[in-house]
Image 1 (cartoon, rainbow, N blue to C red):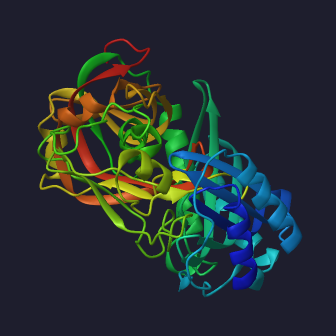
Image 2: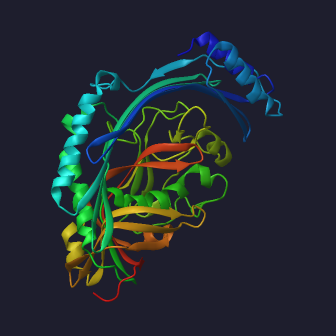
Image 3: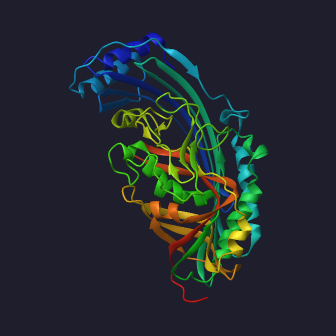
Length: 462
């Protein structure tokens, strides 16, 4: 993307006002997106994003500037602008580069596939969803692909290049009837090329799953409210840990004192049965990266072990504030964003409990099979999440599906109230928004049981 001589000149220019660290990030990303409604293609967009960002540090102060022009003149001007934003005194030399390359071309790259093949996949998902039930009145299918190439170099001698292909199929089914309208969805994605539809994703299964959820919830009564046990399934059930706990373990919050977990390393913050990691190294997974957006190799970070807080997710600037080393956790949406600490594939590790026994041993409560969206305050950990697919449990058996359930609580309290963790973990895909933009992340966990949590609902006794 750029010669070493040019990179060296840009980094030295960024240090010209006395910064003690400079960094150059160059990105080239191709994207393709197709949307189909009720079997008809409504939108198809291809785009390319190319540009560079330059960052400088002086101690724990930082400045960032970016440009869509990666010519030598434009990069030098951008470096000068970043340097001028800091008033400091430091050194003005760069280290010799040690080049490291990560990632690889997918088997079936985005440019190797025509839209006819993409539309054929989408039609399979659409037909499966529409044929599931007459209650399904509308379908929306999206196929999204990106192929991102990044290069990061800095004044400490880092030179890292990574290639990150990603693909995702999102199926939405809308069911309508006398009870109103309900929506079901299924949106698997991986860090792969189009071979994903041979090896990982069955579009017909996605269509059926989206329709199944929509139709099931359409005919379900309203969920009762209460303070009761809740069993939360794996996959996207991990969104509660991601939102209510994961963000509070990022240096973005911790380094500024804005986390409920500040200063708690080595302390008990969860039940003994809870261990959790963030792992960006898992091949082919949606949130995986070869190196982070500061050029630090991705790694498996142990966050919680048997209830004890073991680590945070740390970027370079956060690490300076905390006096701790980076953990390969720095990410950004693109060159127009300065990076900060973010999650990759974050999940609770498998335990030793039987998934079915959790239900059999629950006298009354909610089984949250699929979680929906929600909100959280990272400072306090307080959250409110919708349950996309829920079932009421009574006397150890599933009584009926219920709709309109919400889970309300505090992340630190939920961690301590987990009393069962099943022996099989799986993940689901999402896009996480934070200070450095939108990035792809996996959430996950085994089926877990929270011994008591507030269930919000509108229904009466079942």
